[in-house]
Amino acid sequence: MTTLTIIARVADGLPLAASIQEDEQSGRDLQHYQSQAKQLCRKLNAQSPDRCTLEAGDMNFHYLIAEGVCYLFLCEASFPKKMAFAYLEELHTEFYDQYGKRVTTVTRPYSFIEFDTYIQKTKRSYIDGRARRNFSSINTELQDVQRIMVANIEEVLQRGECLSALDTKASNLTSLSQKYRSDAKYLNTRSTYAKVAAVTVCVITLIIYVRFWWL
Image (cartoon, rainbow, N blue to C red; front, side, top):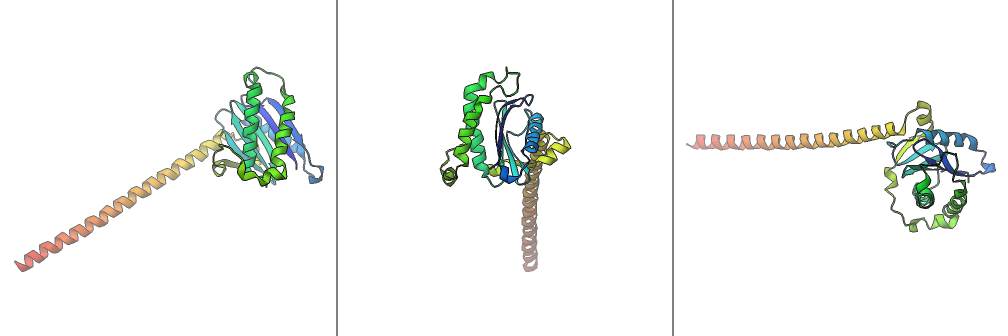
């Protein structure tokens, strides 16, 4: 399976570590994906969503941002999303433990390239068939993966649209949806009150009419 893992500093997109696994039989242009990954890392900022999936045809980019560092994973679209983010969480835990205090001080690209050894070992444990069969036993405190934002990599890169802008749009849509539900509830309440008032008026009118008729 073709995979690409890149760890980069969010502040300036500087790559800190990377690991590549190419499947020659797949015929995929890995250099193209590498270029997209680097462009994406340069577009991220402090306002970007901390978890996101970017679709790239039959491949997906999954990324996690934590402690000012982006952990990016390219894999086949069929690879379980929850497992992809569990993998990124594990990378973050180990990387921050080893290099967290040095991230802001390095200036050379791939200053922590030796981390590739850990990336390869961890990746194998997630891609291995037995691990995938035991997927349900993974102990992780990940958010509900269904709520992770999904976008298209080409649209993000070609439009030059920052992911923070996409996140803002998503938040706006959520706010509008909540406002719509609130307005609908208000209108339903008013409608109920109006119906009750109409029935009350009818009852009072009937009582007055009956009393007047019998008197």
